[in-house]
Amino acid sequence: MILHYLQHVPFEGIGNIETWAQSSVHTINSTRLYADEKLPSPDAFDLLIVMGGPMNVYEENAYPFLIREKRFIEQAIQNGKSVLGICLGSQLLATVLGAKVFKNKFEEIGWFPVEKTDEAKAKTLLSSLPERFTTFHWHGDTFEIPHGAKRIYKSEACANQGFIYGDKIIGLQFHPEVDETTLKLMIENEGDGITVNEFVQSPQTILEQQNFKANAGMLATLLDEMTKTIRLENKA
Image (cartoon, rainbow, N blue to C red):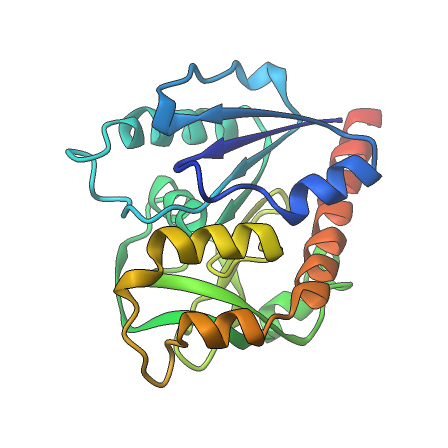
């Protein structure tokens, strides 16, 4: 199976996604949007993963690649591809699906728990995901749940931590892909602007309160379920 990911900055890599893909013997390709690389044909992959980044979905003047990226995501959805969006990626998915992205009441940076919603518990695809676990967050914006989608996770600081649209499109506001290497790179490149408060941890606390095992486990379970759906569809 072929995974293709869209990367927005050099210091936000795929972390746990790569570990999972290698153990499952999947092929990984990428487009580094910050380097103006060419986007592939939707026929060139089975699963599209849209990564995070420090920019906002509405900053098209500063980051022109967002325009063609949104068109590409829309095309992938129209072509029936499975898509996973993480943080900025989830906001891009929400935008493409017609929902608003806006400033959240609280900035959320650090290790905080998320809780599965009742809507998520009713979805077979999500039944194996943990009811509650501590994961990594780094965002100031949030999204509306797109029309026709179901909210799947929530946190104290942010009501909409994820959504599922149909059985193939999933957006996660938090960062299950973060491993030790990617976390250190994010802090090195973005940590200077952190102001500690109730929902923002210091870089030192973030590095000390790591929960990589739960993060990797949740992501592996989700990707297993998504690729299982793809295999069943391909056999039909």
